[in-house]
Length: 482
Image (cartoon, rainbow, N blue to C red):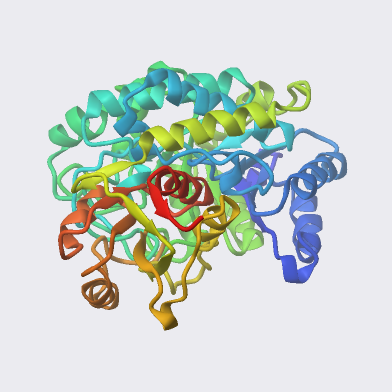
């Protein structure tokens, strides 16, 4: 074989506002393109910067590339200035396939407009385990058929607008009680149960024509007794190919995750992943060592026929998604209006009766998401939206306001738990008595962990989109000073 397997490798490029945006990634970009990688994964940036970056990457490469991003909650999940969309759980609760299809369309149109042609979504996992620290509101729900239907319409709309989808995390991450970012979770369900229940949304995704499937860094010892994670299991990936008849790209999750390196170092693990049936390797910290390990393994640990098959699938994906024409400037205003409408529909009381909100009010925040390697998003959008509407905000220190409590509790990498933490619970015990409303930006299961009898407004996720929706709900019920 004369062609390197570097095309199967996809390094990550991260925006740093304190380091000139993407400028600090220039040495990595130069080295990765010289090595012949198949593309990149984008984290962060604004609309202009990401568009400029992807154009520069394509021009410097002199060939098409696959450029991916995590876009589960719409293109603004990564790119500022694009449209935010509700979480999958909110869409699943709405149970409106047309709305979910519209979200797929918006994601495809806007991602494509900045040069992203591969969306790592939708999540096809089932929300089955209350202790799961990483799926939760990222899933459309627990019913396999409904989740499959939601995933399928999102995929069709996304791909109809020029962006390859990625059903994740095969064969299902919904039963885990641990986070594969931090360890190698093990799911004890039988192969039959996994195939018949957890696998159903992936079957829907495949029938919808999804271009790629992301395998999980999760072990299923009652399916593959070796204890290997699915990404390294020829048996589990073989079922995806031979029984589910999936012919597209099989990809790993991010190789920075502990589940990837639980059994061996990342370079050796990537050899095992390709040998088992993976065709794309996402987000290695050291792409050079991965490329070197892969090329050394061809004809030995990676049979030549397997290497050729992986390259052929990459080439097919590139032909399908790498060179599509520009679709023009998206209708950002129309997309934002649709997103706001969906957010308003998904915002609802999960406990109690609709209160009359008395102003001036004070806003207390209980943030269960502080800590970990990534900063939380802005938490001031709710209050700013109230102020912009003329709602009087009192000062806690003078006691001249009626309290509204905001509780933020999202599934986050390396957070390691699904429940509210001890500090958050203590803060809620102190703040909720006497509050006129609690706004929960999290999973509805957390309602039972909030003490007292105050009404609870469920808003699913702490993203600005849902903070604004919560504020609009409050504004419509305010009495008193404006």
